[in-house]
Length: 253
Image (cartoon, rainbow, N blue to C red):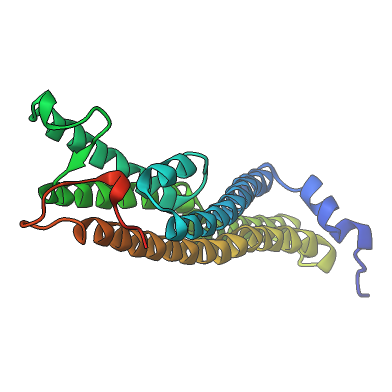
């Protein structure tokens, strides 16, 4: 006679509530990975969305602005923009070189509001900008390694739970001396839930890790393009044969 297993016995909720301590531990660990992963995914998604919008606004303003001072004031208002942060680093580096240049001149050689930079300072600005780009990439990539860890680890954690559940089921068969469907089915179902839990945690983590990594590559490309434009604007205003000029007079067209 075929033994019928009650339907409510094999429900997911019932299996989880009546699972072994080891199975519950595995499921709780997978739940922790999943919750943290989704928190990172949502935080990064909205952060990247805001950063992209502010980057567009800043680049549009940068292309129309008449001088660096106005751009500096506007960039300070942007909280998320990556290219604005790159500009601020370059601008601060220019300001440092200005102060150094002024300290070497006599007070009679320039007016109170004049601020000068020289062509030899551009290399220093370039180094500072490159460091800022690397810092921004690190900031954008923060906590993404957890998504990679979740995607690569949770399937194996789920597999461990499955193997443990199957071992428990076979132990029960040996103890009972029979392999009835009623005795085996709950243990097998419990074991497979662990596998499903591992996949539920891993699949979104892998998908969004690749998605966010692609966004970071796009941000990196935008920062590189902007740094090249920014340095070009400086270089075209300075050469060995050109005397220093004021930052407010730099052509940004």
